[in-house]
Length: 121
Image (tube, rainbow, N blue to C red; front, side, top):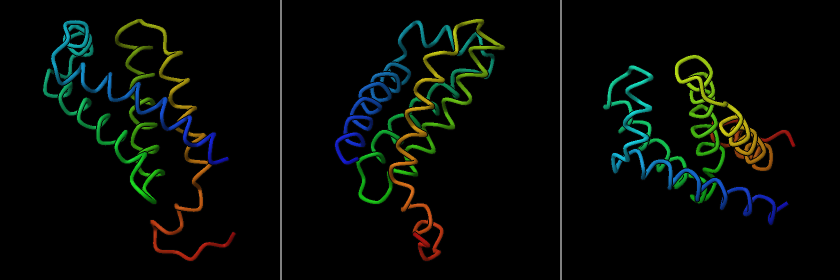
């Protein structure tokens, strides 16, 4: 399970650092995409920051579930944005969301510790 976790987190990190960096750098496709969504460019900066912070949390000891939750939530929003605002395929966002869910499952023992409850497992 350790190698699976490392592989998933590495892939998610590559994707989200690249996507978040593109948003923060103002890549034209990202600017146009956020114009289409209609929330304004401030939301592009927030989303890019969330993606990079979430990717970093995937590697922070005992914080993988926080990073995976943040990134998974972002992918829920991306799925809805692709479906309803942009008219693009939601499949990449769904796949990334499922990968985040797998990381959550692999590190599920952290959930009770984060909420201050003793583990029942």
